[in-house]
Image 1 (cartoon, rainbow, N blue to C red):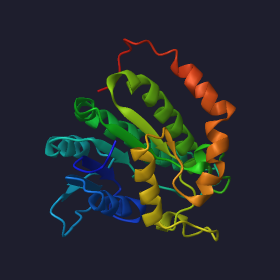
Image 2 (image 1 turned 90 degrees about the horizontal axis):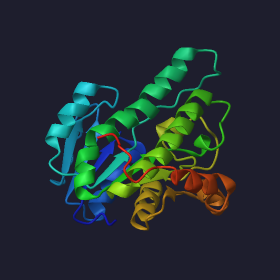
Image 3 (image 1 turned 120 degrees about the vertical axis):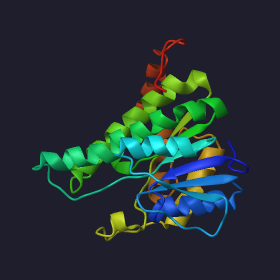
Image 4 (image 1 turned 30 degrees about the horizontal axis):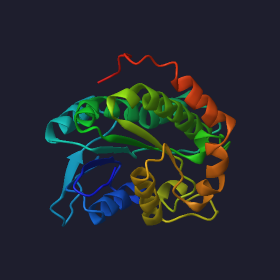
Length: 242
């Protein structure tokens, strides 16, 4: 997968990593970049197209599908992260609505286009998908669920020419991580790492220094070996969404 001359859609594209991904896709020569945001996004590059897209809004998802003529890469970047202590069930539901079901519903809606192009799905996740961070447990739960969904989609779509990639992000210098006094990578460097991993065909992409520190152990560890083993249970004729 190369980005040059491809059509790319990025959710949550108004700021942070999402905005950096828009700029990086354009820099790499994408022929069209659809920026999915809740509010219209103006851009001087004519290849960038703004899509009104709240990933929790079914009508907006369907309207966005109608505006996208072709699609090679879907990057599910939209997400929320709120501090909680697991005393409020609504907080868990709020995270799941965006970080799991929003990602799933957008993927399902655009999957016919991706099957047609033999394209790629890129799900922006987090290190907390692998080990929960107790100060943001609801966020951790939602990212762990999204990680499992990503692994399942990878196995289910492997025979249909669509690749599925998990981005395991460490701390990035965005509004979402403003409360953490720790070293953070820039959104621009993270975006570069994400596209580098996609172009190398990496199942699991570790785009920043914090995530790269565990990449080798993850790729050779028991959890990854189990994923490969379990993927063998998928029948070649398995029906899939989309």
